[in-house]
Image 1 (spheres, rainbow, N blue to C red):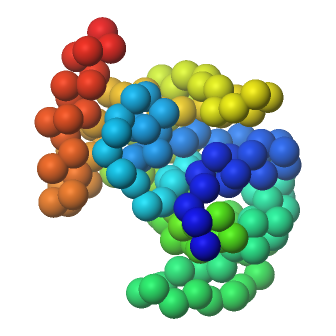
Image 2 (image 1 turned 90 degrees about the vertical axis):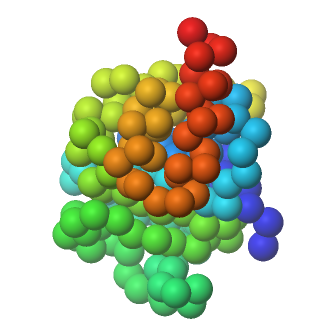
Image 3 (image 1 turned 30 degrees about the horizontal axis):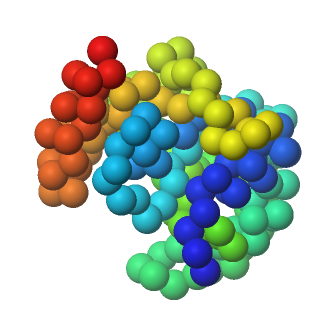
Length: 162
């Protein structure tokens, strides 16, 4: 399976899911050349959006990813509504992490959306992407070695874009 985050975004968009792209792929959209192996998104937790998200996950053949293994389950709106923090998934287009309460000061979809911008990934596909400042703050808060390695580059990218 080849990682194709643009196709994941396309399916989410086609189903009308309200979401913001976070993490490494959001940094790539901003111009980062750092590699990423998954796509992180924060969806709106409105019930109708979770129903649309469940349809998109079905189309993506999404399964829960636990320690490298795939676990099939019914990813319906009720299941998604009860997820407190994060859901790691594998899809037919690669790994996807649904983040419900990301690291950092911004704790919900509305807060991330407030600072986000629109980005065109290809003709006819526009997504909402987290601001570079919010991505940096989240990586600082996550405090993982891979994030520490990325921070100087992302901060330099931010300085170039300002």
